[in-house]
Length: 229
Image 1 (spheres, rainbow, N blue to C red):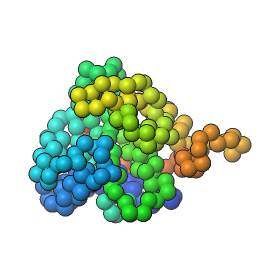
Image 2 (tube, rainbow, N blue to C red):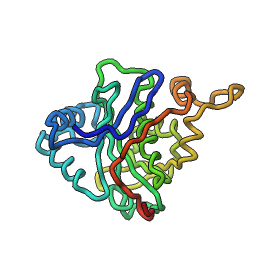
Image 3 (cartoon, rainbow, N blue to C red):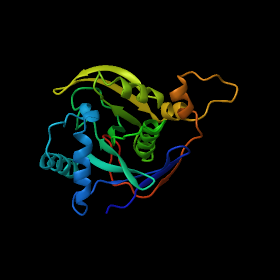
Image 4 (spheres, rainbow, N blue to C red):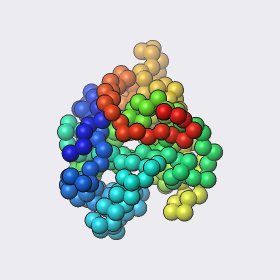
């Protein structure tokens, strides 16, 4: 089992932790991922028809890639979400946007749940952002969700992402968005008590919580384009 590399506590959701994906010593990671990425709620992951062998092959390819890696997220010790981190100058967006020094790309997927937990997905994306920005070399997070994925667009906005514009990728029309460290902190740190809320109640309640406390152990080495370790 891989070692936990990052933890963060959310007041309502509990303890969120992240470890590298383990396809060598834990067969359940592969089976679990297959169930998640082929679930009807994961349509935008574009692996609906994948069998177990294809899912394993894809994540072994990511595992071996010098500019791409994957993590499993836990909530109170239970597997609950998937994270991918990549260098967008080499993966996903190579040649499709103006890459800057310190850019890091990410994907995340929450496990399907029978009973939704209010604030859960926002807690997950906040944890992912904290994980990425815990590396001083990361200056900006870049995402490219499907233009039709309005739920993710709202989440991205809640944690500080700014829309750049549509990008035509081979597999989809994407909405390129970026978030600097300062924009993330401004979106997720509490506003002064006298300031009125400026976002919808369901999102505002979550993003106005106290700044999360995170514990970094040893995130596997990953140096964004143009930044020396």
